[in-house]
Amino acid sequence: MNLLIDSLTMVCLALGCFLGLTGGIGIYRLPDFFTRLHASSVTDSACAFLILFGLALQAGWSLVTIKLGLVFFFLVLSSPTASHALAKTALNSNQQPLLGREDKR
Amino acid sequence: MHDHLILRIIAKMFIPFILLFALYVQFHGDYGPGGGFQAGVIFASALILYTLIFGLETAMRVVSPTALRILAASGVLIYGGTGVLCMLRGGNFLEYSMLAATPLAGQHLGIFLIELGVGTTVFAVMVMLFYGFSGRKDPSS
Image (cartoon, rainbow over the protein chains, first blue to last red):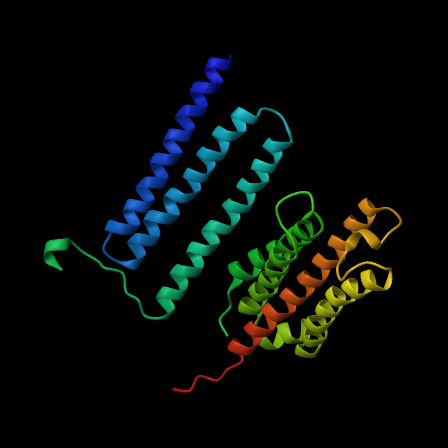
């Protein structure tokens, strides 16, 4: 049982770290504002969920798990809102997304 | 004025929690991480979020600049007053052990009052700075 929980934690943490890293690389590599926002915001929620879930598995049923759950709740509400605000502000200030294939632009 | 529906709803949901967290940081500062300065900044950030979403005039109706000036001054007054109170009770300036019957209780009370003063002043000054900058007219327009 312990081995199962430990390996599940490891998988969750590794996947979460991978997603977080992907988001970071995406912000660095993608061409314009909207694709960068996409890279960070899409990976952000899953990354946070996986890492917090892994930590909660290690904590077991305790107060720490409830606190991690609360952190997850606030993250799930606030990070899409932040992305929404950024995207809306960019559109309102006439930032156009890049469209079409890279070689035909 | 745009109709930021999502932002307004999320902010309304979050501002009470931010205020609650600020109070936790304030009053739990002697046992856990935190203290007056951090609590003041978090408390101010809740009001700044409110200002960003509902506008400067609305926020100034919630906490007026006059009230902020009074708060900023009274925070310093609490800090200095605690120090002077220690002197009046026969210790040095800010010697908390003199504040209560036993030195331990005195230390507790002293750090509590000091942090309260710091938090009040930091909150008021942060919001005042924000009001000052956001109330400025754009010189290019």
